[in-house]
Image 1 (tube, rainbow, N blue to C red):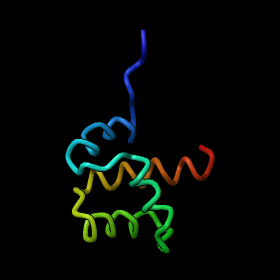
Image 2 (image 1 turned 135 degrees about the horizontal axis):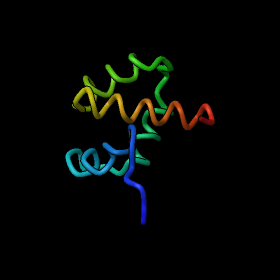
Image 3 (image 1 turned 30 degrees about the vertical axis):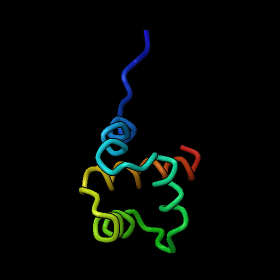
Length: 70
């Protein structure tokens, strides 16, 4: 039996469905941004790409953690 996905990744299916882009594409955008701070990236995703706060926060948190090797 597979454990349910927890944490930021639990938002990924609804992010893909709502915004029509795969998670890998969002992560590429985040990594390509000149911004580096968590809340700057969240605000950027909200204003430039129309994401809701929870979705933007989940993408940034997961991407930054992945890049940090966490």
